[in-house]
Image (tube, rainbow, N blue to C red):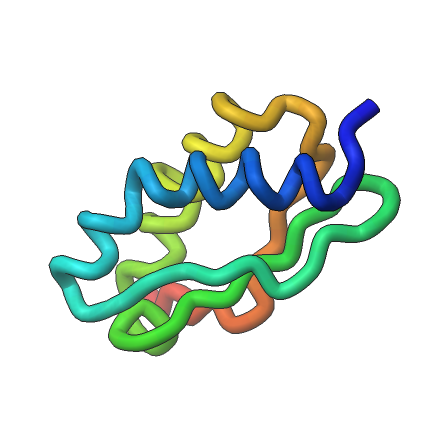
Length: 86
């Protein structure tokens, strides 16, 4: 069983694989919290915080990378995800 500190390191490594794409658009993502039951709370910062594409970026990029690299994580939430307007 991984400790929160180990999970944090694994998640940061996973996020580092996609950060160049976020930074190219003037944004980034940070870990806000990891609960004892392995639910991660992330926060989009910079341009990603209010981008209408942030939901797609999260699903296709961030969530996919974390699930692939850190299978111990049970769920991923973004505390400031911009809703898609239809």
